[in-house]
Image 1 (cartoon, rainbow, N blue to C red):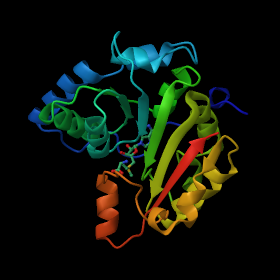
Image 2: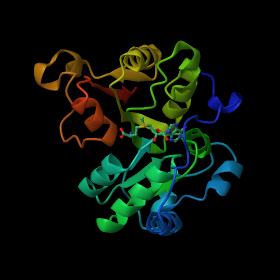
Image 3: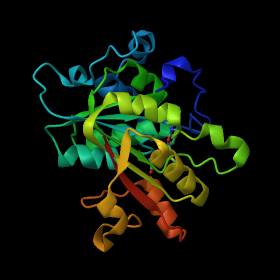
Length: 241
Ligand SMILES: C[S@@+](CC[C@H](N)C(=O)[O-])C[C@H]1O[C@@H](n2cnc3c(N)ncnc32)[C@H](O)[C@@H]1O
């Protein structure tokens, strides 16, 4: 298995800062990051595979820890954190507007079991210890449908190597996409990786069909946009074997 640490990580492309962040959103962002932020400098300089994510939730924390990659506006992240108040939820997002939105949702809903990483999720994964996480969500990742941009898609064999290292055995990886090119790429990458097995019942069971969201699903902003535009998302549930 190749480690992402052995590769130069291309920084994520796309707009990281919104055109304008209002004074109120800027304040919410600053307050939210100071209350819930994971120290990015510490993570960047940490010895690879040395950080225990459980420690970010306090000394008395005994729950499970989940990661959401590229949470956008944080709607899904905050909703799943509310569902399971005794577990911990880490969200990674590079877009400042999305981070500000998530900070606002955390404050409005008085949610405290979330930690935010405001940089490239791959830096965070590199720093985490083996078998540290109980599950991960990669929902509607940037599709990069053009062939010349394919390398920018987050789900690659290198990324899955690192995710597999950090997920404990039996952990669930939930992925979704509405873009036809990205859907094919997701399926190819996920099914090619030996550390992940696709939930077979999902593929054949009509009630658990992979064209429908899994039980207890919370919609994401991109999913809502896709459905409104008539696109048909796929929802893939995989297990760390
Ligand atoms: C298409 S949006 C989907 C957002 C959200 N998951 C949803 O469904 O509404 C993809 C998000 O992933 C974020 N992203 C892309 N690459 C990332 C990376 N390497 N680390 C953290 N976030 C990333 C982008 O900033 C963007 O907000």
